[in-house]
Image (cartoon, rainbow, N blue to C red; front, side, top):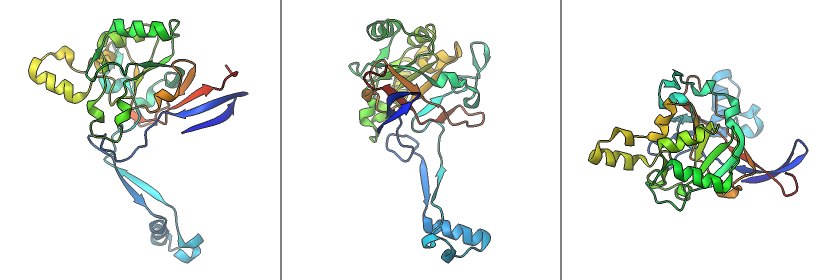
Length: 267
């Protein structure tokens, strides 16, 4: 979805970076959405207040939804430092309701790594090299998002098995430059979980277990996972807004991530 609006005197294009939140084969534990129809909404008011259907416009009440078995990590969402561990940088890790809002907005830098094979572990040198060709003057506070190509399989059960992921050193290289939020179009900023699980059975190497997530024990940072439409925004020049829902003491929360792209002549 794209729209044009005027913002602070500038024309910008809005690019929706968010997947719909609902049942999907791409979610190993899919949400269950129970819809309440307008007719059922009328029954609610009659049961609660004795208001007959005939008193309502068209005999209908309000539509609604109940979401059951809904993980805070379903759909496009933000991971809080608390998700990775109880401490971050030697201090108590922030839950999603306590993360700085300033970390959820910033200059968006999109790094295309879709040429790398599924399961590839992105290292420090690869991140530094690719950023040098896109944003050599990367500013502190920028949000760096990796396009792995996994998004193309959204809606397919193979989605969570697809894409490359960041290693510990790659994450720390970004944090050292003042990045506080890292995104991906894949199911996780780490390599696919089924691959990590299979490798554990063979190698039993603790260092290979979710190195991107556990890098957050050393320095706090946010992840935005399952981003959409990263190919619809330029590598640099856009602004991202990805404010999470304020789930009390949550390890993560859903977001309606949006990119603001300046129209030609507006930068």
